[in-house]
Image 1 (cartoon, rainbow, N blue to C red):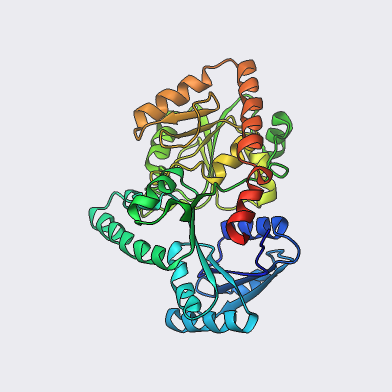
Image 2: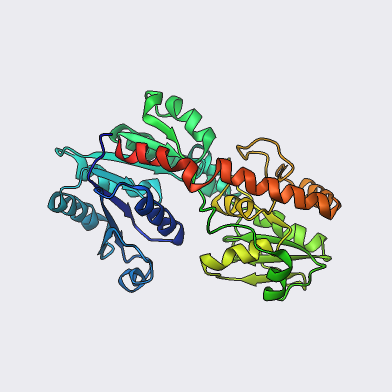
Length: 365
């Protein structure tokens, strides 16, 4: 195959989900591919954090955050290291500096879209912000004209892209975010609950990620209030300016849990609350849950077959509560069977191995 030899990823900030993807690329890209990451110190002391990332193949270059200056610095870096493939690692707007790095150079720029970008205005209930987000679609259109390929984790955006961007459909690719099914696997539920101090008789729902309107924080909050007999574990930050935080006995909020410890929390739970008003992708937390054998309460937008381990709800608290109640009324032995099927589905449709060749082809072919 015609593999490129040097690929550079750029992200203004370097959140944990970016690190997961870079580790995945380090694992699957051929050994003769040189990898680079350019990022900035916008969100903290990135140089200190870099020591904790555990990247083995990637040369990391940290710039002092200055949007205009960074644009020219990235071009200089690409010239110095003779980079021939460039891609954003985070928000698609991160590709703007990469366009300049491509001008008058034999380089390719690939865009990677997280979420259902063509419905980005659904991420907020504030009308003014909706209008601003809708206007962001115009820069996306312009960016697409300068890029060589675009990948979408949302299937619906992937289908709409040729029409919205007025481009050949061969330019667009569907790349679901994969999950490491070796790391995320079922643990013994009784042992996990004992280790975490959770009663083995309790009904437990887990939510992993920031609690925001986009992620259905309003519905999650409503479920917690309506179900005092169910324990809810939230792992992540509760963004109070979007969703007022509640204080109830059946809610435990843990701001951060190391990635390697998450499988035990999933395994100690009965059901995972996964929500996204913007897209139809499973969310990485949805894939992690299923890989651990935990069914998910997801939206009707989720691009997946109707299964008893994927409980689809509409955008209403009433429907979510009705279907969650139905789930907990299912016999425990039958729920064990559902758990096994959830794990099997994750391995066959969401695993690193299943998506490996498609990621290699997108970035390196």
